[in-house]
Image (cartoon, rainbow, N blue to C red; front, side, top):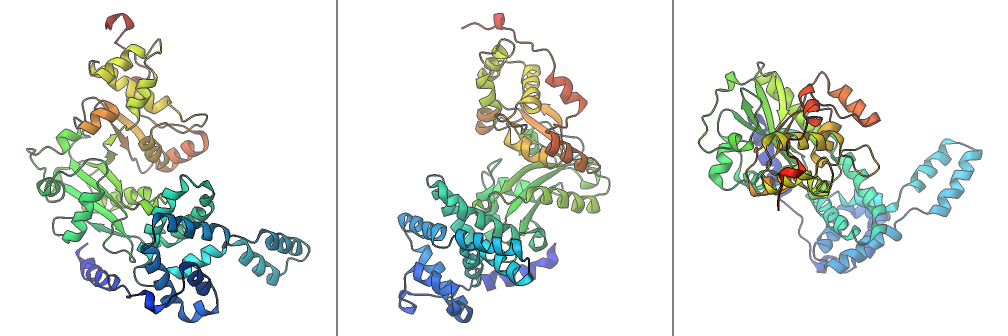
Length: 433
């Protein structure tokens, strides 16, 4: 991991050198500059024009950004009539020349614009930030979804696995990156530098992140890992200030206890599956005695589901008791297991819980469920303190993924299957108001 530091620092310096721009350099407005970039002028002065466009965009108001995206959405859309005519010609005469013209016509001009905008130093980060604005505006202007499709198409190409660099984050990582780890932590908030050090510095702790060469100081996604002797059932224990660090050579389990996506502009472009499997490979090489890779995950929609069950004849009393904090641990675990294995989204066969969808979609199985596992304010609010382990058995992940993707089959251990059908202890007559 250390061998990459010189390259990282060099790239960081390089990509910090943005080309200066001022209105005096080119008085045309942003739409005129976009047309110029797509013309023969763009073939000659593409980098200068792209720099001007990106600089102007950064100074736009929210209303002006909306106008810009509407311009991309309409004026730089597919010429449907021309495409249809070419398709008819190609149907009659499928020549290479017509196919090339058809392929060009089938692509919106905004895709080529985005490619050309990506020429200057630092442009990739600008375009990722631009998509954050687009996603915000698309919530109220649904037609902008067309432009978002083109952003996703290109970003998936630019951020594919071949360009991602896995790096270990430790206490010696540059402060500018550590600051971002603190800011982007989305599962278990990092309270202060002491808390950060407890997660990075001990010998039984690891943190890995994916980076992209065009954004060398910006983590795309990172995972925090605890090396343990057994599968843990409480994040409070994992993050305890007073815990005794384990000698890594004694570890039998690698626990992914926090996975955080960092770039909102890359929403919908998945890195998690790649990260989990590559980190497992890295840890297996360093610690061959580790034989299990599990998560300790939140159940973020559990309380919402419990609230919808309070009128149910069988589950209502127990659900209300869990929400009130008076239910026995057995009921917390049973209801959480039932929720994770049976609750679906609307008419689909996808689980209600977003974290479950992520891990089950990656081929994991629900391994165990725990009560009183997260005493934080957020943990109590979203799942009444319950947490879940997902097991990544690398010999089964492909099979599990296929069964989940094709048939909606939720892979679960026998213990969890038993929990999901266990009798509920809290009965309606035992609750009084």
